[in-house]
Image (cartoon, rainbow, N blue to C red; front, top):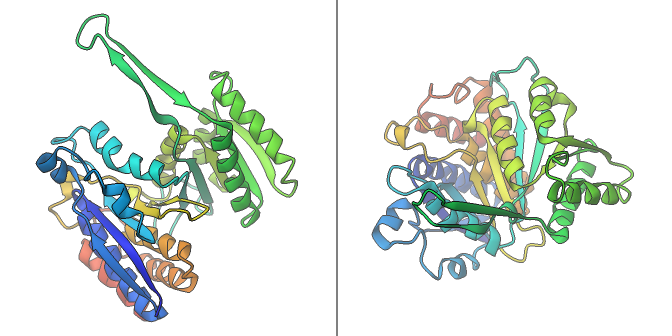
Length: 349
């Protein structure tokens, strides 16, 4: 029996609840599919930071690199640890160390879910550059606390980084509807974003079968609201992709449905899978967190591991659940009830 080693990072708040739910579904999918998942959980979180002064131990990256994949719940507890500390102490180091440069976020309405738009027949795949750009961490502050304090944040864009994320996007478009939208703000950012546009146009010649359109970030935000059905694959920088995918989550009914994958495309290191939502400390004790985004992220993990039938079974179980109205309305159903319904749908496969 094939066994996959999975590192679980439940994290903070509802991350623990939704990770438990996702793992229960994934274990059942593995049992049905004739393979097994061996998990090792790590308590790296804001609680861990308060105890140890770091979000993960110094050998955390070396520990994780031995796994086939990583399943993350959510990280953050801003009342206790600044988000800038938790993000730069755990999530970003993992993405960069394992060259998980492709952040994949699907946006479509599940059956039975009512979105805020009139349009409902959209299926958008956002591809976000995940390791450089605006989140490179280059910069600093001087004269802190003085009236002449200065803060500098430098965005880093490399030809290699832009080319590889665009190529990844082009390949995804080839397997879908053959349309790629490249998002920049080159009318205002005349160096980095013009650079991105130039590389987009150069690569487009290698993909004559893909229809390529360049958009400014503000125009893309409007299009995702006004004409989401016109979009297929959307490729954007780290910051722009981050913002657009929260908008994508909104039009698909809320963050409780927004899944994501941090992919190392050449598989030289493990990839990481996580719901887009945060730790939601205000509802962590209520048992009402929607686990669908985490379960969907788990399905993406199975697909990446090559267990495509199992991934399809999980997605079918999710869709059967929301079609029955369970988990379709944010806050209506308990985490446990939604999980039970997905497990029941999986058993019917």
